[in-house]
Image (cartoon, rainbow, N blue to C red; front, side):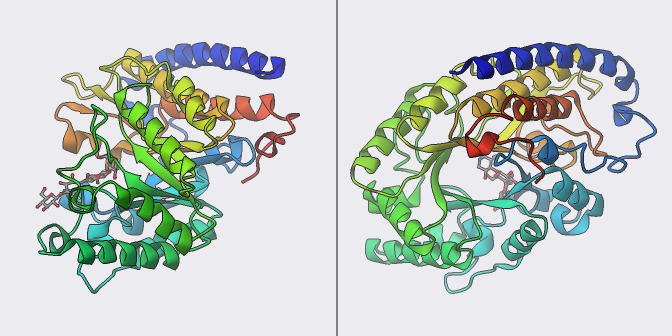
Length: 401
Ligand code: G3I
């Protein structure tokens, strides 16, 4: 590690302490009125200039992304589709991020609702939005045990039919967006926490065996040779049984010449648990295999007090987790994609899944910024400053993307 980088990391750690202190001070005001966590002169969702954003602060070539809210749990909530209906939301989505991931809209149940019918409307709209706003797209996802349509899960297909269904799906969906998707989560959550392949609840592994994983990567590569193809999972931030299983599998697949290009940790974190302090070390071992790495779904949930409003300490801890996750990614050369799973609590999946928990994103419901937002922006800006003279293309100065 270079001296310059170490100095930069020291500055980052100092910045973190300052951020935490500022967060605590700011929250003594915002506790009384959480909607005004920032200056009350800035109306919600407005007033922040182009230069005052995450994407502007990011080092050149670094992708700072978010999930695009729609489908999934949103359909059960008393609001219309966020991506198509919420104009302030769309403005912030365009302004703050240079990468987007469809939260649900490219999953099988949405994009392939009947055996012989695809529905590309939502996915097309997101890809077009991304292109208008010079954003990369992460495709999510192709081979998964969840959110598959009933026609597939409950159909009575032979192994040969299932194989042909998966091949056709991958060729059709990946092929449609060829050249327009930076990274695809080809295989999502294929191991359980003990590091065993999900051979019961994953229809593909159960019916076709583990060899189907390599086929999925090969088909995706055939359909879009430019896309980077990833394994993606939760609870793989640390070195543990599950991430070890990915490490062994990717090593084997690479040795066989299978086009696997990346390993990503979702990073659905909780302040209930300690921060995964070996995240950088874990990403680095995949990097050393020659793989790209990424953080794909970061959020940091917490137990909400009875008032429903997090304390200053909780927000400072959350900011610290966001910052350390970003630092770990920035410290690994091949980790140039960092995505948060939604940017506003208004649309977060967390309270829907975890009773009594929430406030997991970087903005309040009205889009005002939390300490975690500021921690991310300052860390990106510091990384840009620290890397200005570095010869690596990602670090070649200030980004204006
Ligand atoms: O399909 C059932 C339907 O049959 C049932 O009637 C209905 C009743 O509530 O629920 C439907 O399931 C919903 C599902 O989306 C289907 O679209 C769930 O309730 C709903 O909670 C679910 O939400 C999505 C979730 O993935 C599903 O796993 C979330 O919006 C989405 O944010 C979340 O995203 C995942 C990533 O894709 C992978 N990593 C974890 C991450 C968070 O869970």
